Image 1 (cartoon, rainbow, N blue to C red):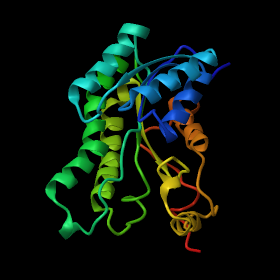
Image 2 (cartoon, rainbow, N blue to C red):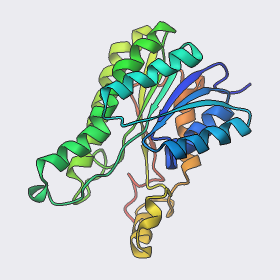
Image 3 (cartoon, rainbow, N blue to C red):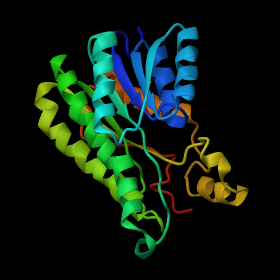
Length: 252
C-alpha cells in the first residue's frame, strides 16, 4: 500500500531541491499535492512531471512571506481536494551572510521572514484545516545550523532555524491531543542548485564536515520527510529529526 494514499499535502519551496524531490515522492506515494514556490514556470514543469507519472498536483506561485498567499494555499487544497492532511513547510533561504555588526535590520528581517515568519503564517491556516480532518502531520525544515553548530556570518539564519525548533515543540504540545503531529526536519548539506554555484574548495569543505564525507541528494532528504508525513511516524512528534549525514556529531 502507498504510504500517503488518500492524503492531501502542501509542499512549499517546491520549485527545486528538497521541496521538488519531496513533492514528487509524496505524489508517488499516493498524496494529492498543492505545490508552492515563487517561480510559476518551474511549478508548471513539476505539475506536468507528476501528472506524467500518474500523480495529482496543482500549483500556486507566490511569496510565503505573504499571509494572503499562505491562506490561498490552504484554500486551494480545500477547493481542489476537500481537505488537508500534511504540510511540508520547506521554503527558506540562507540570506545575507555577514558579521552581525555589518547586518542592516532590513536584511535581518528578510531572513527571519523567509524562514520563520513564513512558517508561522503557513501553520496559522494549515492547522485548522488539518484539525477538521482529525489531525495530520505538520513539518518544518529547520537546520543543524543554530541547533548543533554555529557558523560565522549566519546569525540571522541560525536564529530563524532555531526558532522553528521552538515553534515545533509548542505546536506539538498544543495540538497533540487533537491528533496533529508537528516535527522539524534538519537536513545536512544537500546537493541543490544553490550548492552547485560554490567553488570546488567550498564544496569540498562542506562535504568534509559530514561524517559521511559527502552531501545529500535531495531525494534522500525527501525520504525523511516522507517518514514524518506518513503513519510510519505515528508516535513521533515535537522532534528535531536529523537527516544530516552526521555533520552534527563529526569532529574529523
